[in-house]
Image (cartoon, rainbow, N blue to C red; front, side, top):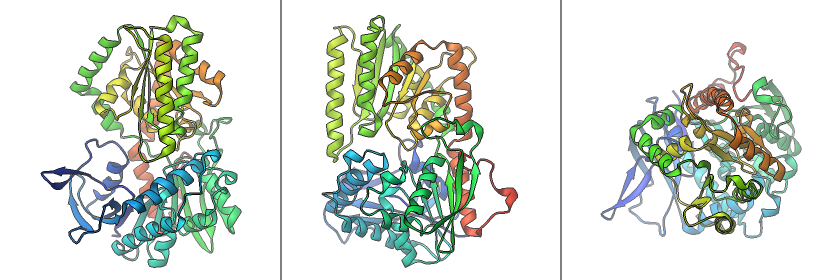
Length: 508
């Protein structure tokens, strides 16, 4: 059986300094992408994980390879020892200031001036070398996300006979947007060295194919129709068909469109936990008769935090009867080392202060701003207490908050449940089209959507939530894992029989 080598920029554990020594601990929450990726090592075949660790100075004591045994199983971690200068150039400058804005269609924020592309190449080459050292012929090397775009091309040079898969966790923009990048042909040529490439939704897959065709002689070989309940014509990210195979230089490249999904079992267990119930009771007691609007995201211009706060300000002005009756809990977890994010954080803090100054009293403040992460069990309690979960990014590859909120809601027939307001420009909107979908670029649409959510009767909330839960369960993290296993089988065996091809296999 071939091994699996996962290449991801983050290590699969947390490093904690205890009495002057570094201890490696499993992440506190089993929810998230790292535990999901680690689960692929639980089949008994072992495997390797390639990641970076940043050190001030290279030392002889540095362990490049460490062997890990945890609740998932046993595997190796091969670590790149990057300098702080490399991390800043490769990750905080090139990835975040040049690539990230283009991926999210913010052309005006694209900044190529400080980019040192040679360092980006150098770091990707180091990742490829580390992966090649772990892989034998026939093994699958699974590369993750845009900051490792060049790894497939380098790895193909180092190990021609490994199988290379790639999963893209961000949006993939249209050709006219992507082609702003000066290094566009090099990036696409590298991805075409893969045997399989995965995206969250068919739109991103179709965008990739269009871009590849604009640069190279690429043939679209196969596509499948998107299921009716996920095609929703007229939506911002809807597609009628999903490409599943392209051909380049005589090689077939399999394409998959399937959202990562949430850990449904973990969220439901957390929602029923006694500590969660205790926290929920405290939140409700504190709120009294007030309604809770909840917004949870990172501080990032793509997340639409500023636009959401402006909409909340307009709501209180337009509907004075809600003053003192609704509260917004805005969780905007502050990032570091990216100047653009600092600017957004300052604007968010300024807006929260302005809204509280305009509408607040000594006893009541309309906005509570949290800039640090909320422990997941506590967050689930807030999901359950919320009358509205307000998720309106300007662009988002998927957005798992929406799925977490849905699965935290109670299933009882007479239970009070919240309403979900969701941006059309979040990948999750393709799946969760029973939410109140909104165009966050339109003031009128944002104002109408939040009012509709606040006023929505419980009978309608329950009906929508039943369908939303069905879809989140169907496309949970286990479904995504099964899709990746299907893709791995394809690249190992070239093709499956026709009767094994999925009806859905993607959001299709």
